[in-house]
Length: 81
Image (cartoon, rainbow, N blue to C red; front, side, top):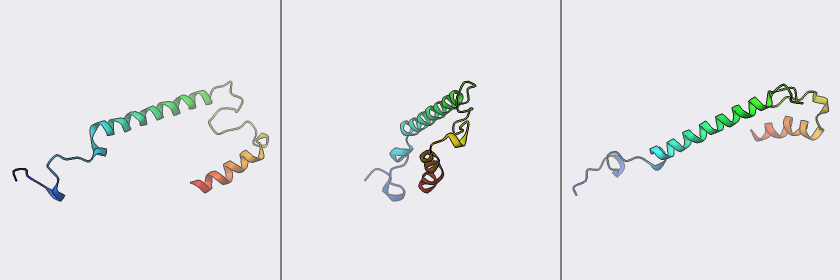
């Protein structure tokens, strides 16, 4: 038995798959892509020509929203999170 074992029988330098460079790099790339997408959507949404008055979740008039939309926003989304 020539190989040296450390804690829990693992070889020195061993890493779980989720902590290896390709997996961490993939998470970083996906995170950056999501940030870019959100910034693009925010830029498009806040344009002056939008009918919703700008912003991602703002309507020009709350009373003009359908009742089901108001219900979903105020009750269902809070129950999920």
